[in-house]
Length: 225
Picture 1 (cartoon, rainbow, N blue to C red):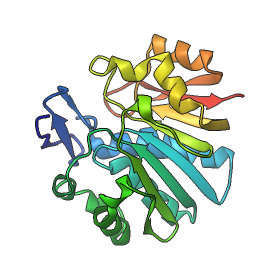
Picture 2: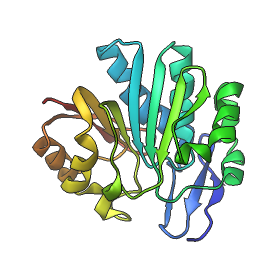
Picture 3: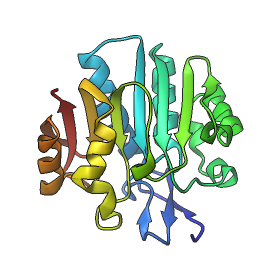
Picture 4: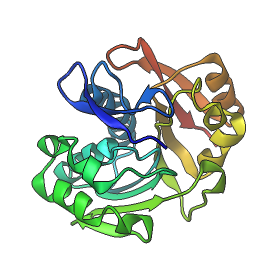
């Protein structure tokens, strides 16, 4: 694969452009704004407001630059929530490239340093980033992913369906949603008719939530059974 390269987004934060896919890892309208809005506020924050609890287990489909993890870890630390974070990433970025994103300015120093120092090891075994923050990354395709336990929240952050249609099929969605407990929340930046139909068929209630800058709407779904 060609090496992704850094590009600025509208809110001043950086993202990566992946030439092989023809897409940015985050919204060009604002990487930081998108991640905070779609995943932290509409996903984790929404879940904890409905289900106050001392710990949370999150699965991210597409670790990418690590921005969603870093912001989640920072949120969990500030709210005294124990975080178990599992991610899938078939094509990991280099530690060198991650260090150039500038995401250190958005999170506490110990989270940033712990992430970079333990990034490679997280692909082999669960690791402790800092107190109360644990990370495990599966270096595999979605089709080959398995895990133990149940999830509270799923961040579905794959590349868009136009570039990766295999990631958005009902079969692919069922693969990850089987681990989500009843009342668990699934969030993604996208919303399409096919996606809504798939999630309904998998036993979710569907909500059109306000989108991040550049998108009118996004999808949030809550597992009913």
